[in-house]
Image (cartoon, rainbow, N blue to C red; front, side, top):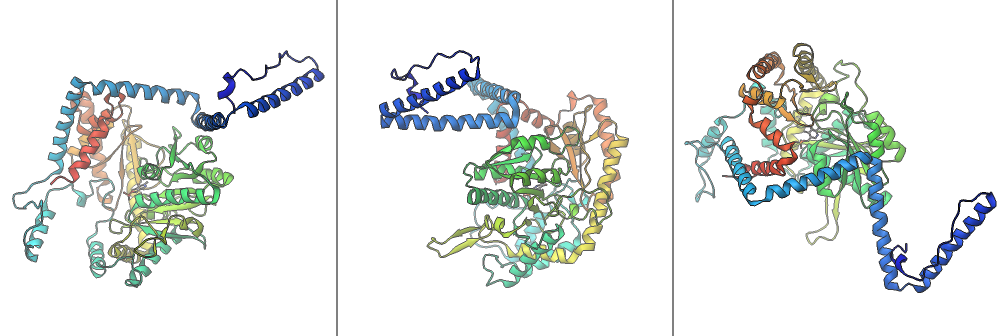
Length: 575
Ligand SMILES: *Cc1c(COP(=O)(O)O)cnc(C)c1O
C-alpha cells in the first residue's frame, strides 16, 4: 500500500544500509527496518487524506490482482509462452490493421463474397418440383400434398450416409430401429417433460434412461443425473454446475477450468457463455493424452473444474483419467470426463473382450461427473444425451430455480424449458430394445472395424501416421509427406466425408455401424488417393478444405476464417 504516496515529501528517509557482518548487526538492521516501516505507516496514516487513502487502496487492489494474474500465467505457461503470446498478439494486431486498410480490405471483402457464393451454391438446393415458402401459404396445403412434398424433399441429393461413407453423423441407421423410434415418437409426440404430472410415462422413461446410463458407467449408489438435448448441453451443464459449486462451497468468484487442448468445442462454448476462464493444457507429443504436469501447473485456487475425455473427438484418444483424478482429489476440485463420443462404446469395451482398457468412469475416485451421448453410440434419435454426477450436491448446482416469477414457482433441471418427451420415448425404446448384449456386440463389431483401419494405416500406408493409440471407434491420422487436407478433398471427390482436424492437420473417421461393411473400400480409396496426391504434386490440387485450413492457421489472414464460418452459418438460414 502507499505506492501512490511515495512521491510525497514527508516520508521518513530510509536508513543507510550496509551488508551486516555479524548476527548482532543483522538483528539491529532488522529492528531498524521494522521501525522504518512503523514510522512510514504512522506518517502515512496521519498525513494521508481519505481520498488519497481510497485511491491507494484501489491501486493496491488492482495492482495485486494484475500481479496475481501475471504470476499465475507464468506458473501455468512459463515465460517463453508468455513472450510468445504477447508477440502473437502484436503480430495479429499489425496484420489486422494492414487488412483494414481500404484497398486491401476491398480485396479481402471481394474474396469473402466469392467464398460466400461458393458456400451458398453448395448448401442451397433448389428443385423445380419443390416450391419455396418464404412466408406462410395463405391457405394450408392438404395433407397428401404435404406428404408428397416431404417425399420430394427426402429425395434431394445428399451425402451418402446410408452407405457409410461418412465419419460419425449417423450412428446406426437400421430400418427396424428407425421404425421403432418413429412409433415411440408418434405415441408421445405431444409429451413435454416440463409437465411430469400430465405426462407421467415420460418422467418414468426419462429417469430410467438416466439410471441405465449411470449403471453402465459404474456410478455409486449416490449417482444421479439428468437427460439433455445433446452432448453440448451436457458439457454446458457440467461446467455450469462446477461454477456454481465453486461459488457456493468455496466462494470462488473468478472461476477457471483446466482442460486438454483436445477437449470438445462445447467446453469452449461453456467457458464463453458462463464466463469461466479456460486454460488449455497441451498434449503429450507421443501419446496425445493430456500432459499431466501441464495440468498441475495450470490448477490454482480459482479452478472450479478439471476435464478430460474418454475418448476425445479429434483423435479418439482416452486421457489418463486416473492421473487427472490424483490431481483433482489432491486439491478437492471436481473432475469431469467427457464420454459424449465414447458413450456406449467406451463403456462396453471390456465386456466386448478388448484388453487393456484404462479406468475412466466413476470407479476412478476423483471423477465427479460424466457426459454420455445416447444419440451417438446409444443409437437414440438425435437430441439426447445424459449428464451424470457422483452425488446430488453437484447435480443441484445445475438446476435453475426461481421463486419470484410472476408466472409461478419455477424450477427446471437443464438449459431448456419445455423438452420434447417424444425424443425421450425414442431414446428409452432404443435402449431397452438393444439391451446390454446388443450394445456389447455393436461395440465389438464397430471397434473391430476401427482397428482394421488403424492397422492398415500403420502397416500398409507408409505416408500416413495414426495419431496416438486410439482404442475405440475413432481413428485419426496425419502425414509428414502429403497434405492431409488435400487428401481429405481427394477422398471427398470419391464420396467420403472424413472430418478435418488441425493442430496438427489430420483427418479422422468415427466408425459407426454403417462403416463396418466398407472398411476395406475405405482403405483402398485412401491408398489410391495418397498415390494420386504424390503423383500430381501438392500445389496443383489445392482443394477447398486445404485452402480453408491454410487460412485458419495463418496470422497473416487476420479474422478471415471467422468471417467464412459466419458466412457458412448465415447460409443455414437463407431461403
Ligand atoms: C459429439 C461430442 C460432443 C457433443 O456434441 P453434440 O454435437 O452436442 O452432441 C462432446 N464431446 C465429444 C468428445 C464429442 O465427440
